[in-house]
Amino acid sequence: MACHLLLMVLSEPRWWTVRPARNLSASVYRCPFCDGRLTALSEHMLIAPEGDTARRRHAHTECVLAARQRGELPFRDEVEDAPATLRWWRRSMRLED
Image (tube, rainbow, N blue to C red):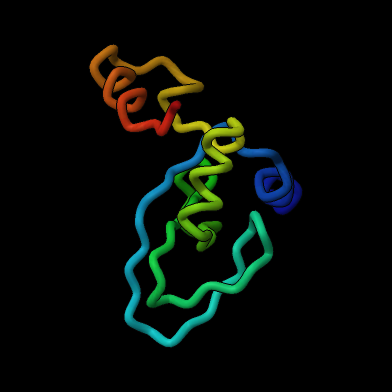
């Protein structure tokens, strides 16, 4: 059982959830993309591998958007079958030139 749990933690996630973060605490976080500091009061995002909030990370909004554009943070419906309306909505939310 412990080996299976370790494998889940170390395996590369297939998809990510991303949402805006709001926190009024005096916490300071480290962005997993640029390794820069960000405060809880600053505008930033929460990312969670395969929706696992126990492994969530705080990241700069700009870093998350750049990672999305590079294809490093796929959403669930981008890697699994999803209803056409949901796929359309996700595509419309992407920032593309």
